[in-house]
Length: 173
View 1 (cartoon, one colour):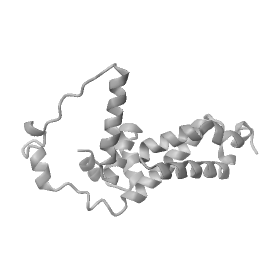
View 2 (cartoon, one colour; view 1 turned 45 degrees about the vertical axis):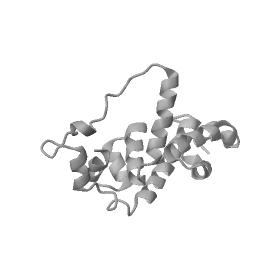
View 3 (cartoon, helix red, strand yellow; view 1 turned 45 degrees about the horizontal axis):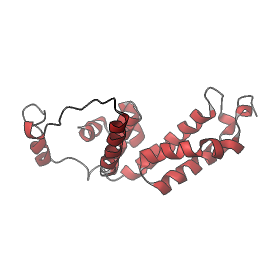
View 4 (spheres, helix red, strand yellow; view 1 turned 180 degrees about the horizontal axis):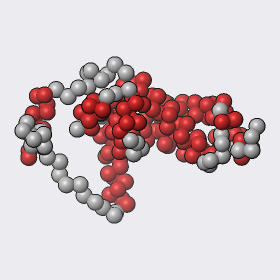
């Protein structure tokens, strides 16, 4: 056991981090049972890799990083085989985008995003955004969440979900 692993307190992980990790997983998976399972899997994986902890981060950060990889694995499994089904067909694109320059048609152009400093408006936005995200196909949800919530690099998303950069941009578009 190295010095860094002596900083860990696995007997306190459930008490100290389970609520945080559950909320983290739930906001990215939208499935209560699966979020609980991921937190449990995270604790088990951390226990198995306790000797690999180098002490370069806090326990919480280390556990969160393990959970992120578990979530990416879920996205990867759910998106396998769905890529062909989820290709946007040209007719749908013509309805929303100009065929000459690829920009939004005026009738379908999104409204300007409203910036608000009102906490209640932000909470309402987060609730509505969460409901919208739940309606996305699995691959789209994974790509959007990793890009705009996790702020991951495109290359990392493509390799993690085993998709091409072209497919990534089709989904993002």
